[in-house]
Image (cartoon, rainbow, N blue to C red; front, top):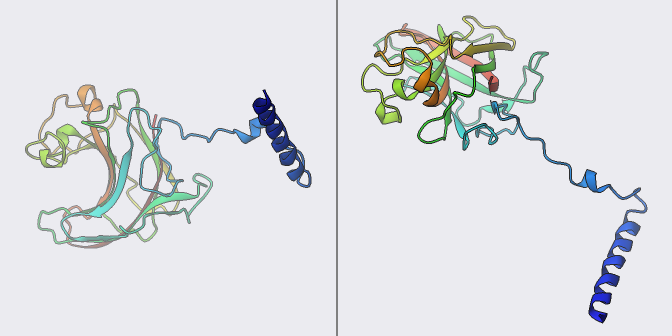
Length: 251
């Protein structure tokens, strides 16, 4: 009994000392305030970039996470690959958030049929593919910088049937013709909201036919990633690439 009595005395003494230490600071915090839950990002949000890293929202519905990357193709592009999740220096009423993805660089097109692009890519880590059939579409905020001189800008949803086998898809010939929409055709200098439903997303038409031909059925269950691409569309010359992306969500 003496052992238990000593334990009780020690516990009470600890509480008294804790109260005394808080005496000059005010009352003790309530238990509820000491156990406030950390707010989670909603499960329909792919990423809002507020954590400053290149990992998708870990609470995304049906996903184990995903990763962002920023690159240029065909060896013709230079981009700020070292650091591109940055402070939103162009915050405005539509997008007052603190962080966003910024793709900045240049692209030279030799007009030889190589079609180089600069891309912000998000890739789902879900194996084998990400199932988006519980959603209706995708939306995001985009800002085309005032110095951007790309001649083609397109948002693409990459799926198994349009991605080559070597890149994790099942496409064998005439690949890369993804479903998507055109991004703003000219520099805006301000944040713009864009949305696309799966029912209205289209391919450009030069790739191999797929079944189903629309963004329905198994196509919705085989997402690989999301690409924001800028290029010169096989036009000889060099373009400044300068665009921002933020608040990427399903709906």
